[in-house]
Length: 64
Image 1 (cartoon, rainbow, N blue to C red):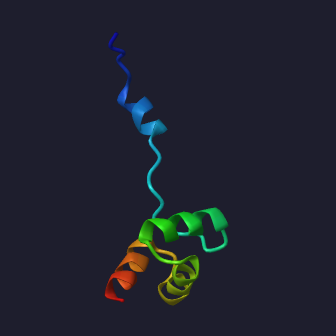
Image 2 (cartoon, rainbow, N blue to C red):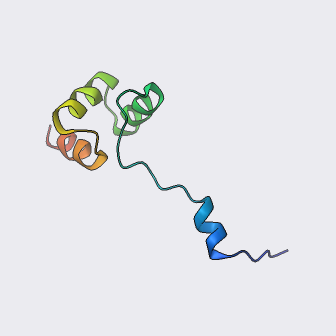
């Protein structure tokens, strides 16, 4: 059976991906360290250098 839904209901249930990493959130830092294939310590070090923006963190890690 096909169910029709409104665009608004689809958009409201979609969660945008994080654009920043909260260095105080252990779950988030472990997740992003795993996704970026670095240690949690390296992730936190990079965040302290460039800030919590995922784009900035990825950019810095690619240069290393």
